[in-house]
Each structure stands twice: as C-alpha cells, then as structure tokens.
Image (tube, rainbow, N blue to C red; front, side, top):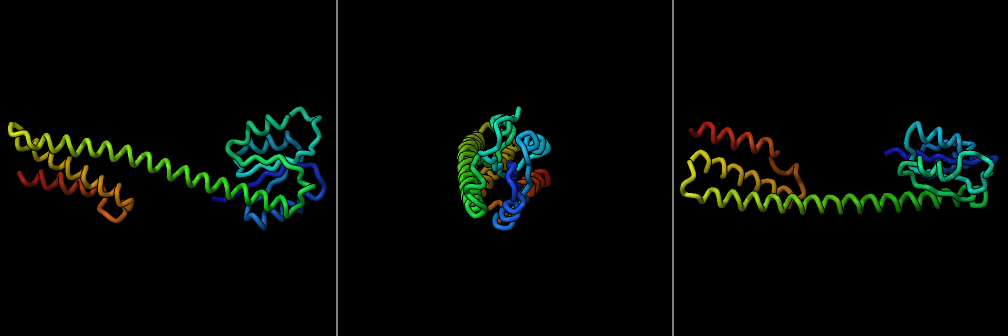
Length: 187
C-alpha cells in the first residue's frame, strides 16, 4: 500500500521537509498551507498520516478538531515541525507508522483467529449432526448419501481451517462438485 502523508504547515522550507519525508519514509507527501486547505484535501481522499504543525495560527475558522474529525484513520500527529527538524519528524513518523502497522497486523491475526474459532464450532456442529443423521436407520438411502456428503464437506473445511493453507487442498467448490457428481451418477 502506498503511503500518503499530508503536512499542514505555513512554515518556510516545508518543501524540504516534504522531500526528506518522501525519501526516508518512501511516501507521497503533500503540503497544505492551512487547516482549511488540509480539510479540502482530506475530503478528496484518505491519507496515511497527517502532520499538523502545532504552531499554525489559531485565527483560522477551521480548527484542528475539524481536521482530525475528517482524517478518517490517518495517523494524527500535531507537532512543532520546525523544532523537530526534518530528521526528527521523519523518525517520529516512521516510528508511529511502524506501530500502526504492527497494531493492524495483530488486529488482523486476532480477527482471523476469532473467525476461525467460530467456524470450527459451526463445523463441529455440522459434523455431529451429519453423523447422527447418517446413523438413523429409518433414513432414506438418498438422504443418508446427502448426509455423508455434508459430513465430508464439513470435514474438508475443518482440515483446511486447521492447516491454515486453503491452497494446499482442493477448493471447496471442486470437492462439492465431485461429491455431488459421484452421488448423482451412482444412482
């Protein structure tokens, strides 16, 4: 994903800071000379990070709070850009972006684990119910066959979830088609 950094500052030499950030953080850097200009830019699309110069004059109608409300998930930093200098800003930005990346990675892993756990529970229920159904002696042979197919599909899903490698086994669609074809042609 390409990173976009929006610098909101009226300071002289902002272009030099933008070039340093672009080079060191490997990002597209845009400059807004006021909070109002930043707000207009944010309305055009999201940015990865928003660096708001804390020494911007407060005389503007557009406040920092309004800018933050429209930042849509951007890493927000309100800092004295001139005091930190280009190297300090780059280091701070890289550190914050790395922290964000790590937090997103952890979040994705936790979400995947929660979904996997929920699916495992549902699949276990399917396996148990299909086993109980297939043991029913009064069940018509065609329904017993369908219960067997459901059990095999659920078992395939369970194995794929456990392995975490869906590409290493046949796709669910191909398994379903093959098993359905077998049961149709077996008649």
